[in-house]
Length: 477
Image 1: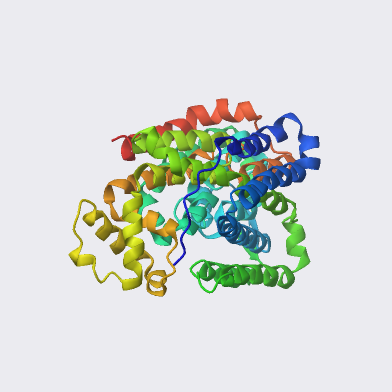
Image 2: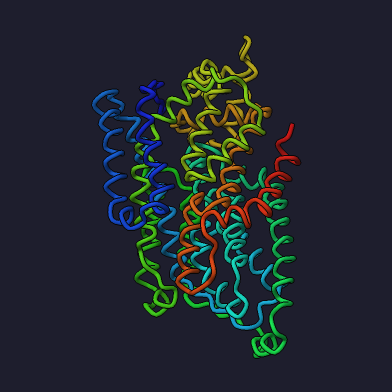
């Protein structure tokens, strides 16, 4: 059975993590040229400081190897989806009426859960811009970011990076869809409704002669590179493979290679495909995964001393930080805080003792925490039966099972899951695809708001009320 000793790093070692996140947030805004030339050096240097502390100071080799495996899994999924999506070219002709546009964004919100928000954004942003070229305004770009690049990907761990990191920590794949769909329906539904009203007003301003010309011929949809759906299926199946080690990642990389070499170059050229965006993500997340270890460990060790926060507080705190920092490490930080605040270490140890016996003594347990032990073990049997039978249950999985088995704590996982995904839409820096969409839109001469314009003209008047409704309906209590 895989266990991890509790670590209590020096709080000062959180500084490289904060420095890297601040650099990612402010570097492109304040010194774009310098940042593009040197971001890799910044990520590697700060990551090296933390790794040296963990390997030479704490001698936590197993801890570092566990985090390295999670990084490989994370990049394998994100990268393979990016490559496969880049091999599919969607061409749309015809008139982009408000109803057609709204349907297109709804389709994007659904596809985001299969291709990830990055893959869906890269697949759909160019046809979206072409559909609306004759009346393209800022709201087309911004609501694409709101819905396709962020909020839409809330139903599966594939949908958005924070949710996949939660899946690697032990949150079951289908638990996300089972519990997050009401929030997804409200968030996507409200945003689509707001978009329809804005787009209808914009549509009416376009001259009738221009609309009539664009409407001829009727709408046409053409998809090139459809064989990549096979590679997409391989990736989706691979997500569920946990053993043997690295088989999941090998299948994903193999699918990406098959897509890359099996797709016509003309399709990649039509999509303006290149590896630069995913290369930047891979490099920055080396630094993020390395430097966030002290922050996660310190939070888990000390969260209990911070009191008993409500799900609403977790929703707003995790969401607010996700809007100005990358939402993936923010999510992991609050997941660690949830472990530290609510998971009882004694219960985890009792469950670990029960695993070799297959829970034979479960019915005879007595004591103050007996019911919590039973519920945690039953959650392991329900969600991690294969690992339980093999005796390879990670400590992270036991801690997640504690939260899932004791229903009162489910709401905290929901709060940080929804917040990390939804609030990532608040700014250009909240989620990786946001800047990619902005760059592509600007390349095609679309009007995009400035950083402050994005927040003041769109986030505050349109997205914030949706976030308030979601909080009021689901996390207020």
